[in-house]
Structure formats: structure tokens, C-alpha cells
Length: 492
Image 1 (cartoon, rainbow, N blue to C red):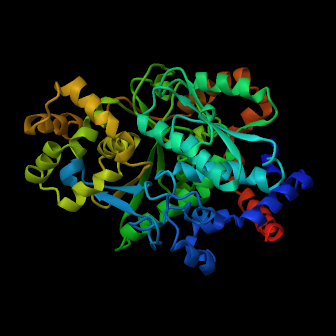
Image 2: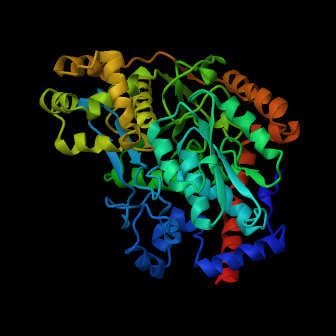
Image 3: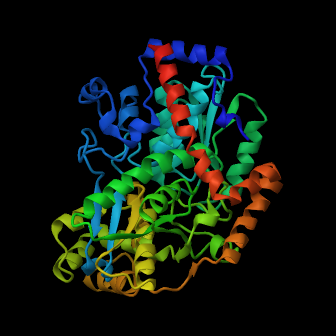
């Protein structure tokens, strides 16, 4: 197994130099348990946070890398921000509850948590040299932004690797945060072109000074989300379940790197809910070993991530890119909002909450509706999902869709057509309730990426069949917390 699972310091000299730099810069690291339960964070740190802007490159913002940030992204809330979608919008009786991710600091997206979980364990064990190495963040957008943010705060040089076809908003953010334009590496293609990202990382890895932090294979991504996002969603359900009669039936999340899906393992263990992975029908890798291109930015495709716990996944749900593209316009265009208010009776509060929904967030919601219809869920059933980022990251897409699909005009009739096709008309096609054979097929598909192409040993690849392997990963949380505490003491 990787040295990521080291339970002690691997290189004391590297760790010592990092601690000295942190001492000089006044950096302190939060434990994963504190990010999972931010009410346990040192009150001194919380008091100091009051004067820090949530998007500043300030070390104190590490203590905001959790789901409990308030409306101003500064203070804390007891329950993570969430949206309960009305039946007038979803057309299903089940309660679809969406945890909101754009309150995270620096990048207004939850991938900053994954980045923290991938880099910090290496740092506190002396496996990342702040003086001589660069953190390389391969991604389709938000993860590399999170990686650059965490790296900047910790004083590490970083490289963002992402497809050139991703949204301009991502690149504008990176251009502000990176020290050198050469630290943004644009690879060919768009959302589905992960192989091209991996190829670029292979070239970078030839230089030992480059440390590749691949979210698709980094177990720190899985561990951080299961520990932190899983508990956050459990708390959201408990807050919604005021009468104690509701049932958590499913957790729905786009496949992506499969880090967020790890929260489903926590929810299945704690609440007994099932897990559904979402992908684009234009690139149906999990559905039928398919391939293609799509624009649901942030969910990847064309391979099975190493950190996807396939044998604990119950459904695969396909959503066409046309749905989030069109619904993004419905939710944010004045004519679309007027239609939802005047013809569907949605409140201004509900309509205003749509600013929390990016493209993959909308895809998650459509998939949740499909699953609720497939299972014929009732009013006492809850489907949990996440809004990984907000609409602000996709403003440039509005004009593109408006011109390409609506001839530059979006009016009440257009809004009604979008609502009818992509909400009221949601069908239960392009989805699978996974059998053992289905899981075997999906699991085996990962062999070609990870063993043949990426050099993972067959033993390490195969042990992922067992749930005991995934459950055992969580033993690293107290280990890492202990190492973080020791590092903080050394850096004090």
C-alpha cells in the first residue's frame, strides 16, 4: 500500500523544516474530526476567523473547510446549509434534500476538502517537501482550484492540470491564485478527457520534484469525504427528520472522482440508505462501458475511479447534459424565474436558492427525481444529494446555451418547454439497479485504467472488492488527527 497510510513520520527532516516554516507563518492545521464537527474547533481560532474574509489566502480559512459555514460564509451554523425541493418543482412526493457546497472557503466548492485530505497527511508525515517539491492537482476544475488554494495557504508551489475546454470562470480563478502562468497546464479536450490529464501527469512525474495528487486514486479524498461530508449529510437528515418518522432512502451523487460518493458509505452504515452514482448519458461508462463527450462539468467519465467503492453502489443513473444546461438557464434567466414563480407557485426563497446549483448539482437533482420515481417513494422518504458548487461558476454557459438551443431568445414558452422536458417529463430510463454481475462488470472495467495504464498492483486493485477494506480506511482518521496534533505542537 502507499505511504499515505504511514502511521508515523517518514522523513523527520522534511517534516521538521515544514514545521519551522509553519511556525514562522503562524499556520495551524485543523484535524479531520474538527472539520467533521466544527463546533469542537478551538474558540480562539473561531474568534480570530471573524476578521478573515472567506476567500482570502489566510491560514485561518483552513478552519472553514467544512459544511457548517453560514450564509456569509464566515460564521458557523449548527446544521449544514441545505435546500428541501418542493414537489411543485420535482413532481415527486419524496423529499429531495440538497446539501449546499458553495459556502466552502476560497473556491466556493466542496473540493477544497478533498484537496486538504490529500495533501495534509503527506505533509505531517514528512512525505511532501515544501522547499523542493510541487503539488500537482489533476482535475476537471474544482479539485485543482481547491488544491491550489490549500497549497497557497501552506506555502507550497502547485500546478493545476485541467482540460482546456472547462469553464472560463475556473481559469480566471486559477490565474488569480497561481504564482506563475506556467503553473496552469491546459490539456486537450473537455470534461471526459481524463486520459489526457493522466498523460500530462506521467510527464510531470518524471521529475521527482512533482508530487501527483490524483483525486481519482487518492484515498485521502475518500477518507475526508466519508468522515466529513458523510456526517454533515447525516446531520442534515436529522434536522429534516423533525418528527422522527422520515426514512433516508438514498444518497445520490455524480461519479466524478467518487470522493463524494464515499459519504454514501457513511450514510448507508448510519442510516441504511442506498447509494446511486450519476453519470452523463453522453458518456455512459458505468451504464454500459460507453464513451463520449459531455458538458456536465465536474464529473469526469471514461473510467472507473480507483476510490469508487463499486460493490457498495446500488444504482447507476444516467442524466443527459441537456438537462443541467437547460435547467441552469431556467433557474437563472429572468423569464425562467418568472415562469417558476407565476406558473408553478415557487416562493422567492426557493427560486433564490437556485444560485447554489451548478451544472453537476442540477444533474444530481435530476437523478434524484429519477430514482424517486423508479422507487415510487412517498412523502416520508428522503433522497439526499449535494450541490458541489454554485451557479456562479457557470455564468458563461448561460449565453452559450441560450444561443445554441434557443436562438438567443428565452421566454415563458421556452421556460415551459424546459420545465416540461427536464423536470415534469423526467423518465426512469438510462438507469440500472445493480446486481452482483453489474458490480463485477464495473469493478473489472477499472482494471484497464489502474493496473494496465497507471501501474497499480493487482493485489492493491483487487483488495477493493471487500467492504472491510473501505471500512478499514477510516482507521486513518484518528491516526492523521494524532499526527496533525503532533505537527501543530512542533510548529507552535
